[in-house]
Length: 292
Image (tube, rainbow, N blue to C red; front, side, top):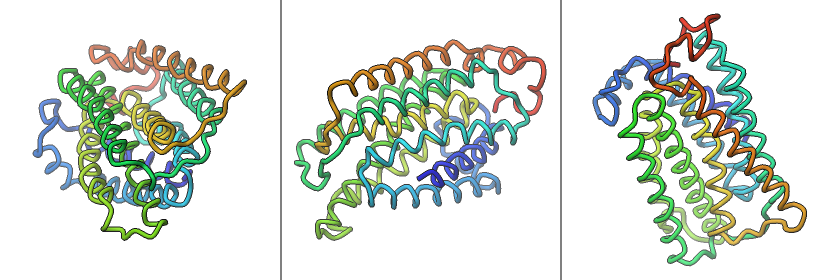
């Protein structure tokens, strides 16, 4: 899964490099995708993303979703390091601190809960429907906020929506893997066809979030809400059991760290669509990627 996280990070940087030249007016349009298809760096990014997705799917199928998904947190520092190298910028220390605080908080949250048990193959259809419906409702709200927002605000909202859809897709894949392990045919379970629908939606949202603003705005949503959504699905839908007692204190502290890091990052000039490059990156190095 760590290899998958690195591939996802490389894919984000490559696709952002291709999408950053698209005008803001191109968002939510097929024309933007058509322009991107003709760029070799974008095609390389998509190929890298597919390789990461395949490794990700294998990992989810072979282990519990709440155990595997948190490892995707490593994608965030991978992305920041690769983006700083590729775009020739130095991210402000406050932004790095906020993102690392979010990552540490999520790691503490899921490791202290450490859910066990559960069976995705035994989930009732009504429970699946309720989980998918609630998840989609949150995504729709974030997409509307992104559509109404500008640049970094749009990137942050669409990044969050993309991360949640990624988590939903991972949950559906876990359902496919569990059903196949219990003897069902791959094309005999409805989750297989749901993945075929959700995956293109997540891809479209991903491209729009990468086009909308810099990676520091969109990437935390991809990276943090993906495993967080999967853990919530594991606990609420698949029937996994979290640890109790003193471990809950660690989960609470982790949740507070995520909230603090999010608040800290939201106040950064890097996420302000009206900020100048000097305000976002400082005077040292900003010319290489003013929108990166």
